[in-house]
Image 1 (tube, rainbow, N blue to C red):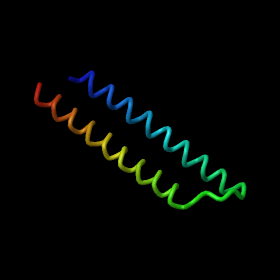
Image 2: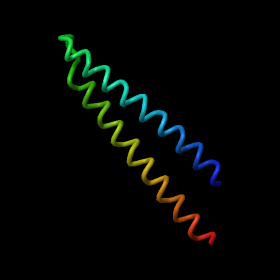
Image 3: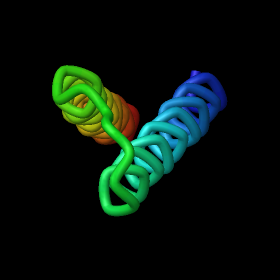
Image 4: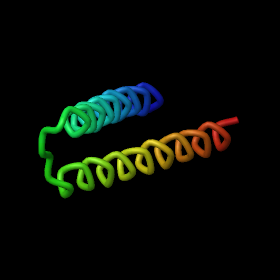
Length: 70
């Protein structure tokens, strides 16, 4: 079961990194004077927060399961 947690953790971290890169790209475009709708940045930030919470919960659940086994 632990292997599945690590795989899920890897996928979530990979998605978070992609979202953070997209946010940085959007901010760079804005800095260069290119219009980027605010709702895109807001949606990316919300998705980033959602994935971070999911990752945190996954890690907490894994810690609880590990503690129960010991």
